Length: 136
Image (cartoon, rainbow, N blue to C red):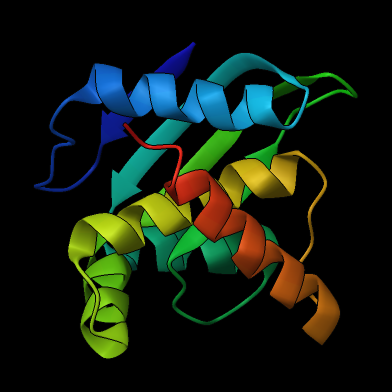
Protein backbone atom coordinates (compact mmCIF):
# COMPACT_ATOMS: atom_id res chain seq x y z
CA UNK A 1 0.00 0.00 0.00
CA UNK A 2 1.31 3.40 -0.99
CA UNK A 3 0.20 6.23 1.31
CA UNK A 4 0.56 9.97 0.88
CA UNK A 5 0.73 12.31 3.88
CA UNK A 6 1.02 16.07 3.82
CA UNK A 7 2.79 18.21 6.41
CA UNK A 8 2.81 21.27 4.18
CA UNK A 9 0.53 23.07 1.76
CA UNK A 10 0.97 20.60 -1.10
CA UNK A 11 -1.11 17.80 -2.56
CA UNK A 12 -0.26 15.18 -5.14
CA UNK A 13 -2.82 15.29 -7.89
CA UNK A 14 -3.86 11.86 -9.10
CA UNK A 15 -2.64 9.96 -6.06
CA UNK A 16 -3.82 6.65 -7.53
CA UNK A 17 -1.73 7.21 -10.66
CA UNK A 18 1.37 7.93 -8.57
CA UNK A 19 0.62 4.93 -6.36
CA UNK A 20 0.46 2.60 -9.38
CA UNK A 21 3.67 4.09 -10.72
CA UNK A 22 5.52 3.42 -7.44
CA UNK A 23 4.22 -0.16 -7.46
CA UNK A 24 5.48 -0.52 -11.05
CA UNK A 25 8.92 0.72 -10.00
CA UNK A 26 9.02 -1.92 -7.29
CA UNK A 27 7.81 -4.70 -9.61
CA UNK A 28 10.38 -3.67 -12.23
CA UNK A 29 13.08 -4.48 -9.66
CA UNK A 30 11.54 -7.92 -8.94
CA UNK A 31 10.31 -6.86 -5.51
CA UNK A 32 6.92 -6.63 -3.83
CA UNK A 33 5.29 -3.49 -2.43
CA UNK A 34 4.67 -3.43 1.29
CA UNK A 35 3.58 -0.27 3.08
CA UNK A 36 5.28 2.85 1.79
CA UNK A 37 4.52 6.25 3.25
CA UNK A 38 5.44 9.39 1.37
CA UNK A 39 5.44 12.36 3.73
CA UNK A 40 5.57 15.70 1.91
CA UNK A 41 6.90 18.50 4.08
CA UNK A 42 8.86 21.76 4.03
CA UNK A 43 12.58 22.40 4.55
CA UNK A 44 12.30 23.05 8.29
CA UNK A 45 10.38 19.82 8.92
CA UNK A 46 12.92 17.72 7.00
CA UNK A 47 15.88 19.60 8.47
CA UNK A 48 14.68 18.69 11.96
CA UNK A 49 14.50 15.01 10.99
CA UNK A 50 17.97 15.25 9.46
CA UNK A 51 19.39 16.72 12.69
CA UNK A 52 17.43 14.56 15.15
CA UNK A 53 17.79 11.17 13.45
CA UNK A 54 20.85 11.41 11.21
CA UNK A 55 22.90 14.06 13.04
CA UNK A 56 23.25 16.04 9.79
CA UNK A 57 22.75 19.80 10.08
CA UNK A 58 21.91 20.33 6.41
CA UNK A 59 18.92 20.79 4.18
CA UNK A 60 18.08 17.91 1.84
CA UNK A 61 15.36 16.99 -0.60
CA UNK A 62 14.69 13.47 0.68
CA UNK A 63 15.25 11.24 3.69
CA UNK A 64 14.11 7.66 3.58
CA UNK A 65 13.77 5.20 6.43
CA UNK A 66 13.94 1.66 5.07
CA UNK A 67 11.93 -1.12 6.73
CA UNK A 68 12.26 -3.55 3.80
CA UNK A 69 13.23 -7.16 3.93
CA UNK A 70 14.85 -9.03 1.05
CA UNK A 71 11.70 -9.09 -1.09
CA UNK A 72 9.11 -6.71 0.37
CA UNK A 73 9.82 -2.99 -0.04
CA UNK A 74 8.52 -0.75 2.72
CA UNK A 75 9.47 2.42 4.49
CA UNK A 76 8.88 6.12 5.09
CA UNK A 77 10.01 8.61 2.45
CA UNK A 78 10.13 12.24 3.60
CA UNK A 79 10.24 14.76 0.75
CA UNK A 80 10.87 18.49 1.12
CA UNK A 81 8.62 20.10 -1.47
CA UNK A 82 10.64 23.33 -1.10
CA UNK A 83 13.89 21.53 -2.02
CA UNK A 84 12.23 19.79 -4.97
CA UNK A 85 11.02 23.17 -6.27
CA UNK A 86 14.51 24.66 -5.86
CA UNK A 87 16.14 21.65 -7.54
CA UNK A 88 13.73 21.88 -10.48
CA UNK A 89 14.56 25.55 -10.86
CA UNK A 90 18.32 24.92 -10.57
CA UNK A 91 18.23 22.05 -13.10
CA UNK A 92 15.78 23.95 -15.35
CA UNK A 93 13.32 21.05 -15.43
CA UNK A 94 9.60 20.83 -14.62
CA UNK A 95 8.67 20.45 -10.96
CA UNK A 96 6.77 17.21 -11.72
CA UNK A 97 9.87 15.65 -13.29
CA UNK A 98 12.01 16.48 -10.27
CA UNK A 99 9.28 15.24 -7.92
CA UNK A 100 9.20 11.89 -9.73
CA UNK A 101 12.99 11.68 -9.61
CA UNK A 102 13.03 12.17 -5.85
CA UNK A 103 10.13 9.78 -5.28
CA UNK A 104 11.82 7.10 -7.39
CA UNK A 105 15.15 7.78 -5.65
CA UNK A 106 13.77 6.72 -2.26
CA UNK A 107 12.35 3.49 -3.68
CA UNK A 108 15.61 2.73 -5.48
CA UNK A 109 17.47 2.99 -2.18
CA UNK A 110 15.05 0.44 -0.74
CA UNK A 111 15.82 -1.82 -3.71
CA UNK A 112 19.53 -1.70 -2.84
CA UNK A 113 20.88 1.09 -5.03
CA UNK A 114 23.38 3.46 -3.44
CA UNK A 115 24.73 6.90 -4.32
CA UNK A 116 27.85 7.36 -2.21
CA UNK A 117 30.44 6.86 -4.95
CA UNK A 118 30.69 8.42 -8.41
CA UNK A 119 29.91 5.08 -10.06
CA UNK A 120 26.97 4.36 -7.72
CA UNK A 121 25.60 7.86 -8.38
CA UNK A 122 25.84 7.31 -12.14
CA UNK A 123 23.88 4.05 -11.84
CA UNK A 124 21.33 5.72 -9.54
CA UNK A 125 20.75 8.55 -12.05
CA UNK A 126 20.27 6.04 -14.88
CA UNK A 127 17.79 4.09 -12.76
CA UNK A 128 15.92 7.28 -11.84
CA UNK A 129 15.50 8.13 -15.52
CA UNK A 130 14.38 4.58 -16.28
CA UNK A 131 11.77 4.72 -13.51
CA UNK A 132 10.49 8.21 -14.45
CA UNK A 133 9.85 6.78 -17.93
CA UNK A 134 7.51 4.19 -16.35
CA UNK A 135 5.07 6.93 -15.30
CA UNK A 136 1.93 6.67 -17.40
